Image 1 (cartoon, helix red, strand yellow):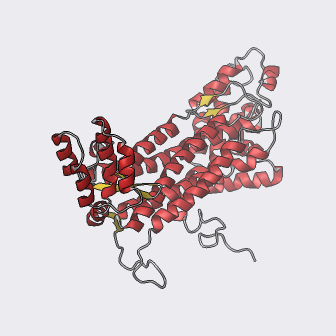
Image 2 (cartoon, helix red, strand yellow; image 1 turned 135 degrees about the horizontal axis):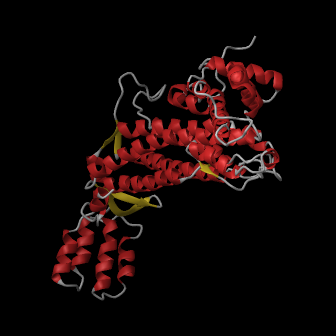
Length: 453
């Protein structure tokens, strides 16, 4: 017997385990949502044609136009099921939308009913519907990304002056501050968000192979580019004048690449924070009743950042397939894009799950300043950099080589370093400044840069 579809029986975790986190996307990327957007486009096209000046299609009556708009505004699951029942007969989903409009409004439309889908290929309707869905989906992701950006910026300002040991190649390196490291990611993410926002989504309504052939056969005197462009732009999109049967999806690919780039930045953040938690730089706020390990009671695992990392990987695998596959179509049209486009919500869904996990992890973080300070205090060798740089300024022979001999691969103490500095033939003020320097104060402009994020 078939198993009833509920969250616990869903094949995909996006509708199952993570259904609560992705519920907002059901209104945007579901089959129901896709059908509603197709209906919106068909009605926008018919409304535009009724104003084009055809003798055979006068302007829609005062009662007809509102009734058509109401079909979209009040579109329900039952309406969608009715379209799906028509599709079961026609074996064509877009034609089913046309027939649905005729069923609901045919009597009031009269002869105008035959102008539904006039001159259109299915892709004229579908590509506009997909672009409308992506516009809404983009806003959902941007809202979450802005929230993460705000959290990163707040951490940058809050911890701007908390000195910490850097690690390059996993080894102790020139100190920074906790806030500056948050600021770095904040600035990167801000740029990535701007890239997502800047993508202009294109759509087309130009017939079977993009040349208005059927349109001009019926009405050669009409400026069909103007009519089609008006419909697309009236729906809030940009008009693509040159296409084959399908809109080439280049702007979609730009959007998917931009989202994937933001996801990569967050994946980098997830891994770094995982590492800093491992070092003890951060603790995680405890939640009553929560268990870290089924066998080790002491564990408080960085599961939110791990969950985020895993879902970002899934999201980018799908998004990058979209951007590589969708701009490719054999000759004027093949159907390989159709099934791929039905998965738009998957790429956005895994991104959304990852963002929620990342934000949850960020809000759990508690800085452990004593651990960070103790780590710094064991790394006096990092001051080899400023010492040899000052030696260069004052013409001391082989400064880099001297410090390399003194420090490379060795644990250097404050006393060892100070003994070396006191032996240098450099001005007294420069010597005193080096002796006053500690790993915790050798942070350059880190604090200032953090506060500027």
